[in-house]
Length: 330
Image (cartoon, rainbow, N blue to C red; front, top):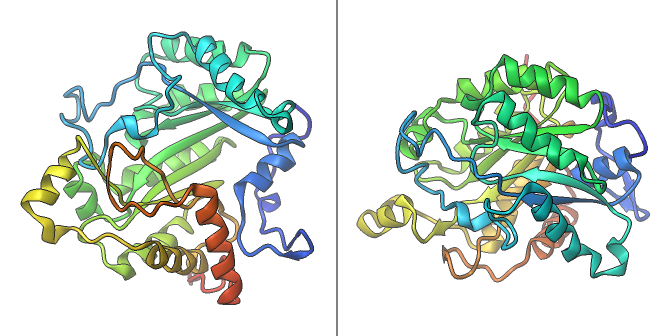
């Protein structure tokens, strides 16, 4: 890896020029390119973890919206070794000439990837890091599944290689978190993010926009709450109704609880959200795309990159940018 993977916060700023035009939002892909001096691709890994909201330690059934199959690539299966999954993931990209020399990050994505003993966790992470094409790790987890021991390990590791911890927050509203059976409150997320970023580790958060009971102003207020956190990056995605979830059953028995955005409505909501979001927080994703065979609603027929193009166009049409309407603390 070339470059410095421990950029200071001040370097995570909105880039004002790209392709001879105005860059209207802080794209985390640009930051990764700065860090690695290369295009960067995540390779998803299923390491066979479970979740405390499924195994009974916090609850059973999981979060009401969750069907883990919606974001697991076909090559990810826990019976395969970490190395096998990485090899298969990278081979997919090597089929195209332009991806021959890009950098790769091992992305521990499925379920809760800090939910085990430290010995087991370190053996898994370090197997991934021994792969000659892997230049860092990204670990998806819950804010109630980290402690000082694992964060101390990540801190030491981050001094040698790229490490990002991604926390599922989903909402900053405690009533919503209870409704979706999240199993923790928002203060838990605040504590975990502060503890992680305070160790100099890249820290990201996920939010779902459009959860039941949240009106437009509640959704936009999530941006204000994110601005209070030391986040490197933020992932957004629309509420999706997916087969095999508790939420899918709720939508049948209580359809009045649910309201789904059209693509245009969500594009405008995303732009409104960006206007409130600090430009110091890079955006890694606007939408999620569940497999068509699992998706109930909404089905926009747009690929992720197509949606990004539409958001960028709408920012230009509205002559606006990330942070334009940021609410500053007194």
